[in-house]
Length: 165
Picture 1 (cartoon, rainbow, N blue to C red):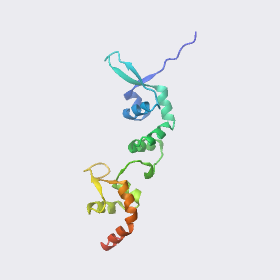
Picture 2 (cartoon, one colour; picture 1 turned 135 degrees about the vertical axis):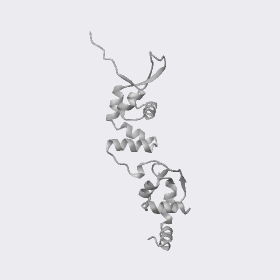
Picture 3 (cartoon, rainbow, N blue to C red; picture 1 turned 180 degrees about the horizontal axis):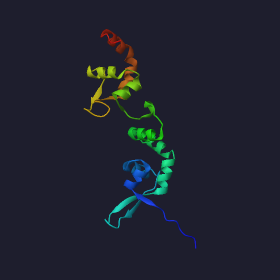
Picture 4 (cartoon, rainbow, N blue to C red; picture 1 turned 90 degrees about the vertical axis):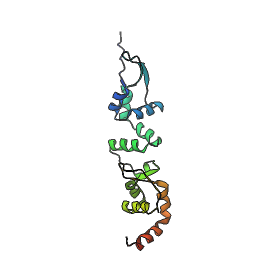
């Protein structure tokens, strides 16, 4: 009589640890159909909990499906985290965020970070003041940087008048 193999399942926390993704990301991937999610009743707490098949988690870790789904989900932070883990360094044009830190804005525009911050402080470049946070105090809209492209010669003249060039 052939023996039937029993599938192994992990709860959300263990699945997240095994896959290297957050619980939220696992639930999103399950909603998109990339991995399977089942609901079972916990015998101790009598609550329904979500579990994930181990084979799906291993397949997910080994495949490029995660990268494609994350790129389409517009989640820049998750994309950076996944790429950092895989050794891929994304360019700024691949990060689909509308707001950039001053350092990211400098890389995107090709202008020095200190110059962009000075433009923000003088009111020549619109930005959000998010207070003291990782990545700095200012968040600059990508569209504002794109608008600067046409005004580069004006900005350069303004900098030259101030003796900064």
